[in-house]
Image (cartoon, rainbow, N blue to C red; front, side, top):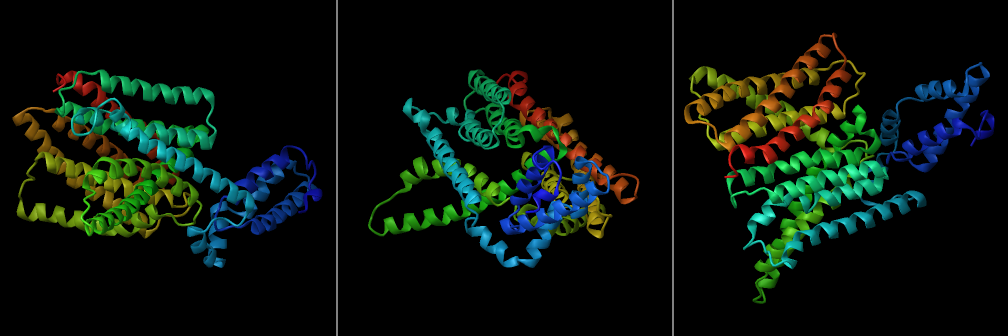
Length: 458
């Protein structure tokens, strides 16, 4: 190292360099020897700049700017050492410090995952199994995994005491509300509350995940990126688990032993809960791989979805047939908007905000506008049906979520078009998306807590 060439080596400048080095060390494509080499270059730049009359803190900022964005550096090393990338997907880091940290995180994640699996069976200790007390499990679906996932990130991020109190209070209030309200067992409002409460509490997980960075656009965008990667990893684990359980059932059946009850009562529910935390750990462990899966899949499916939506709109115009709105169709259109929003978000998360508009950006705009047009037709049909047949909890919940998604995508389209025309910044689109997250949680909380009162807990 050339640390002696830099003035005030023991002062605030060293803290800044240490933070820069720590951040760069988390990039899997860059190994410890590379970090040392880059730090030498950084210190040479700082020494040259301070010699030219700049203050140490100013010299650091200019030198980092000259070195380039860390993501860019990571990509360069990945291109030069592509063999590393595949090894790092399955092998532990060679650096002893990083190895110890990875093992510690893995052990902690395993402990929290086992806790989630145990939590699923806690009601059994009080004589409430899934078959005879289905309502208990429906209401408390959110609390088997999310508190433990929140605790894992609070431990990992070393969240402050005040924030921990707020997180605990949020879960406590939600748990008391969902269990005290006099729902009709397996009624509409109970099911709606059980489905929407995890959406509202996912924001609480996000606060724990981002910690002090939650107030920053980058912090919230990291949580959005994590959510997409978690979904992909969880699906992959579930598919692997399905194959495993199939083989297990077959080999035991070959000797005349049926394990169906064990699978249904123990293995599947406990493993399904624990897999959420294991998948979260995997996302964390591999988050510094240059290309994440969610943006890659979004880029792959964006043109396909755009073509399907355009074909659907053309069909509507040619045939003149109205959309037949049923509950399943309503849910489908909500899902469509959610998928389009997801592709927009994950494409954004992998994009350089300072880059010029490209053809792919134009394709994104086409996708969003086509989704808005298709949904506008469906929304009109939904409103007409509610006007004719009256409102129900399911219809209003679906309609409300549709409107929430529609507002997000509509303003996203406006901001994206402004960016494409050179009249706005891409950062404005990122700020809009990350600032909109509490709206989803707020609407989900309304459905989970307010709807039961409005509709008499039926």
